[in-house]
Image 1 (cartoon, rainbow, N blue to C red):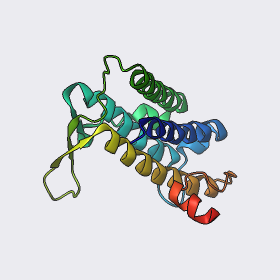
Image 2 (tube, rainbow, N blue to C red):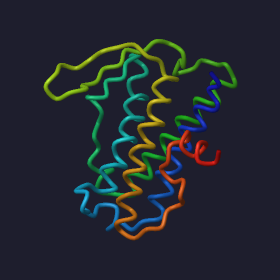
Image 3 (tube, rainbow, N blue to C red):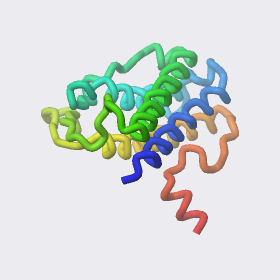
Image 4 (tube, one colour):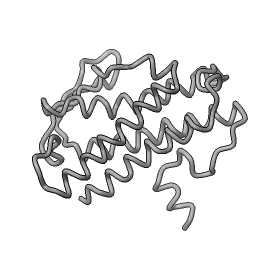
Length: 176
């Protein structure tokens, strides 16, 4: 797997988060809409997921139920921007370390123990994965939340690019 493509696509997902933050007002960021959600709650979730993956790396775990759920990201656009920029820097560090082949803090192909609840009435599930696979999942999950942010943004009368928050495979399919 070409890790540079995966890192670029992860950064692209975070770039879309940042672009949206730069486009909307503070009021729109936290405004409740008819969908009974805010852009800010959908912004926090993928940022939390990325942060959780990086914070669990020293232990070779990713426990998505134990993610921080940072309320400051939900209430403060500057905190959300800071989180996105910090995560993009972490991803750039991964790329640089991969190219240099030096003491990688994050070993991309090494097995991780991943834990997450998949239903509220069931116990947490544990399985194995690796950083590459988790980044793939975060890109698609982040894109899903971006699509929800687009729906909310449109309700708030923001004009977004037609491909904003759209799955890459859908864009390719539509272009034929």
